[in-house]
Length: 177
Image 1 (cartoon, helix red, strand yellow):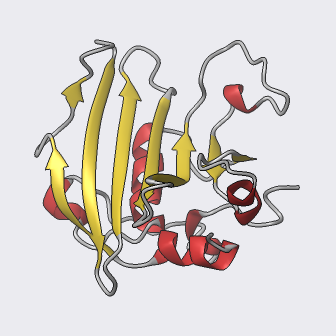
Image 2 (image 1 turned 90 degrees about the vertical axis):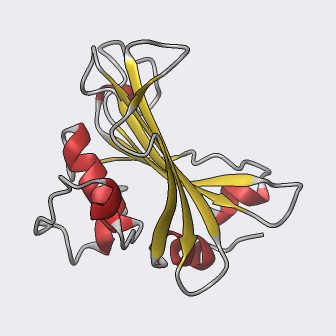
Image 3 (image 1 turned 90 degrees about the horizontal axis):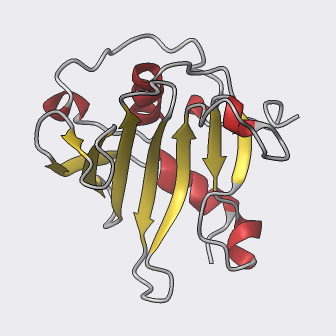
């Protein structure tokens, strides 16, 4: 089982993109023509960890997007664990307890969730650290420490992050309150 420190280390470890589908741009989802998608395969630079990143963007509701990091475990019982996911607003109707569907938010996995047998990032933190798909993607790629971003995203903005010193884009304890 992963501890919170191990989860954080996996999120922050340096990674290189080794494959992208599609190679350039984004593809239209076969199931929903209003959604563009891209999948990335990554490998950590220091260890033999493998990851996937999924990127989904709704073309009709531009505030509706999802960008996530999956850790490919060696354990066949677990498979992939979603470590962190950045989401835009899901729509105007919000039936969630914490009202996160109508706000920009981050989903994270925790040691407690894993101990309960939950392998999906369910810990939810509302955020103001991104407000568009592009700002979320930029922050996400930086936060999960992707080193060769511009090879796959030539228009990636290497911008100074206002929250640079604040936990590298990941929600802090003060954000959760």
